[in-house]
Length: 352
Image (cartoon, rainbow, N blue to C red):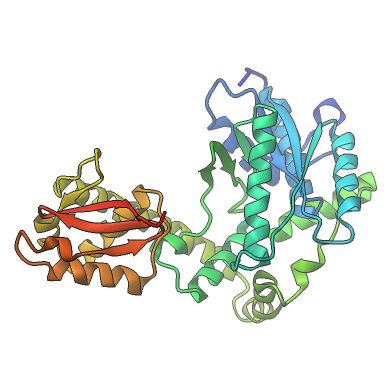
């Protein structure tokens, strides 16, 4: 990151359109937290109001910090207007003087996880490819406080655990790319007000994705059916729920630290990812389950359902003295959990 004088809030260096300080400041703070050798960043832009304003705020912050900025656009091909949206993003890039890179993806409809999850997976894969293509390690995303609150509600209704209730993190890493969400404390209303002013001043109108208000999609159902009732009864509910997510993230971090300490105390071996069954039995039932979750997560395995994890714990508790421990065989995600000489082990399934 090159040394440069900070840009006064809301002013446009190099002819950039004005942008409110409340949008620029969180982006600038996130970028200042990157490694000093960072020279280029990117912002994911769909063409909607939120991501367009992120592009504008990022352009201000990047120029003030001496960073090169790229705009990444993923063409899903799911809407008839997708080609127009791509052209719209290119026009925004030209307006801001920022290069735009585009990736086309095919969203499979046979994953069994739903079109929303499939599109999200395809989008992250495409963003990762674009980042590698132009040597970018950090990509800004436009998720905001309202998105965070909706995510908490969705995960609550799906029965997510403590980690899931922490919702979206301000910084995550996926396939070697850091994703930054600087606006998790910024309300949608502030972003949309800025977008309206930008459109009036510059003549560039954000696109509207019809799926955002189509109640057939889960998130849109929360937004169109549940949100109005919450707005009427609890006007500040988004900020309250987002604060809840931050508290859950802190609690999840504490639990992860306890689980890691427990795993070390169980004589965890990094050579074969095994640990002592006898020491595991001495933990309380809640800590037994937590250390199993932590162990599986450390092996990059998907988390089993509560019922499946409880079954593994039940089998481990029922194992008897040495010589009988080979009775255990718990299969999950192409792996088999077993017990050898009173150590819990995991190996590839013969069918893999």
